[in-house]
Structure formats: C-alpha cells, structure tokens
Length: 169
Image (cartoon, rainbow, N blue to C red; front, side, top):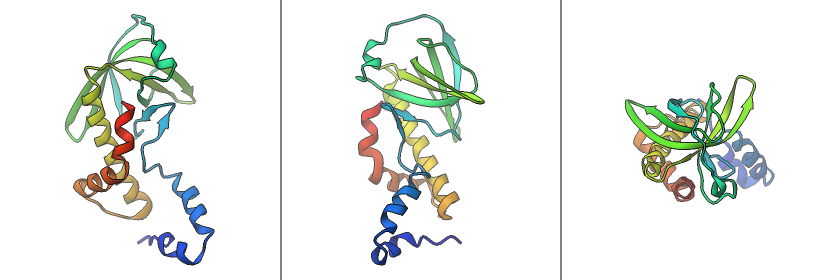
C-alpha cells in the first residue's frame, strides 16, 4: 500500500510543499484547461458521430470569449467542421454538437478543440463533470492506492474543483 507521506512531511520539511505541488502537477487531478477549453480525459473516448465540412466563422472563439472541450482523437477533422460528438461513460451516452476550432496534430493522433453549441452546452458540461470525476477516481486509485466509490469521488471532486469548472463550457 502506498502511503501519502507528503501531508505529514510538510510540517517538518518546508521544501517538500513545493516539491509536492510539482509532483502533483503530473497527476492532473483538477480539470486541465487548454486555452480556455476543458481537456477531456484521454482514457474516456469521444467519438465523432458525424462531421460536416460546412464552414462557419468563429471569431468569438479565436478572441477567447467562448470555450468548449478539447479531446484526443485518432482521426483528424477539418478546422471549422460541424461535428456531432458522442461520449460514453458507464452506459450513459451523451451527444453534443459543435464546431472544430483547433486541431493540434501529434505523433499518433491529434488534440481537437470543439466549441459546443449553446443548446448542448449544459448536457456536455454535465458529461464532462462526470468524466472528470471518473478520471479523478482512477488517478487516486493508480497513484495513491485510494479505492473510492463513485459517490465519494464525486463529493470530493465537486468540493475541490466544481466552482472553477462550470465557467468553461
């Protein structure tokens, strides 16, 4: 069993606080933002249910006035494409429409940032919160050997991160 010595060690080793903050940054417990977009957890897939190459102007996105989600995808959509996204989490299926505003290619896929349509923003925000809570629960199990129920993880995550999360979708 992995023991979390950092909390007690901070009392008698002042430098450990900075080290712990640096170390904790690798675990990404709180939602990560990519230029105002919530980064969707990579272990929970987002699928393109449909795409359309109909172009629309997204000036307000590029000025940073709105936001959405950023997720990992194997297929690379066109910039400004209209997409329908599907998120499956524990037999719950969430669907949202949006516009691709950024594509950042990497070795075996790409990060895709999508502005969610106002009609679907609430649904996707709730889905993303559930995904972030599940990611938080899995990270705690993997890195700290903490077995949490979904309800325990939800209560803890909501207390720590929900206030900063809601403004980004």
